[in-house]
Image (cartoon, rainbow, N blue to C red; front, side, top):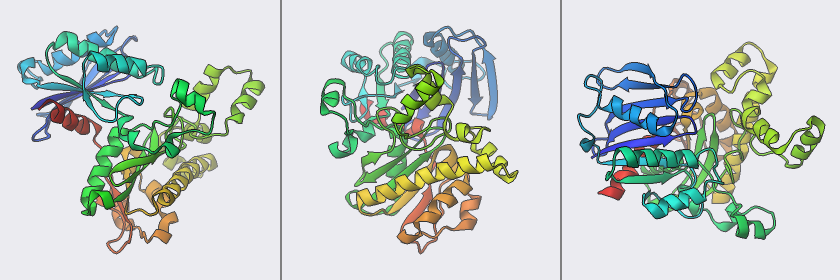
Length: 399
């Protein structure tokens, strides 16, 4: 079964065509700057590995999706000869609110509920809906499925997702912790449990999804019981450009001192803070590592603060689950930055974790056990694959 995976952002459309049985990727690419000047589609010709790029005017997602279809059907570079070869489409949808605790086949009711959650994810859900609408127009009759970032975390107990504000705000507006990166946390935790080789219900795993956006999740018995992102993806860890958790009173203080409104504050916290704001250099850890090597103290501060925020969350989740069997690192930083992994793990020697420094330093973007064989608690790098997870869910739903 060939599954087309679609991941729409506000100005982007990322895609992959995956065989659900062999899990081979037939095509992948990215449309950027949708609705902006100089839009393009960049894609990989999987048969040769050649990367290509085309400048195309893309005023909206429908045109972008048509560009994807044109590339897929290209006589030379295409992955299929006819759209009839595509059996289903799987969409990443950021916010499912409390409506969805698993992936679903899309129908009119599902679309209305995704719309109802749009005020919880105003930059993402409307774009996801545009992708669904574009598919419906260009591929009528092909089943579509929604795979939600928030669904995996719907197993959190009330005590974990509720905020310490008047309960009426939860009742009226559903203000609560939702968590994000759920597709990644689900994919990696399932693999971690396979590695442990013990019954799912007896497993305790902590997944560290560390990238430009970062979150950590406690997975007890295969279920998310707590996660660091909250009502929005701004909460939790210090991230690339996001502040993570801050004292809310800081916002009033900055607003008064800088004459800043709410939109200005959110822009500050989302786009000008985190590792970039602390370092003054970059949000990219390759630049941070280079800055540290050059003796830049603010680069070192950003690195240390990022790691420390992860250490505190991991420690808290060990306590919340009353133990842990495996700590997994994934995403761009988690899979590739050995220094971050080593800095975080050195604080968990009391759990019986000993880092295998040679393996850790040699591990970049591949699965590996980075703790020693005799470590009581295992530490692993497990590459995430959200597109494959979406394809698996979609194939399961439409079979």
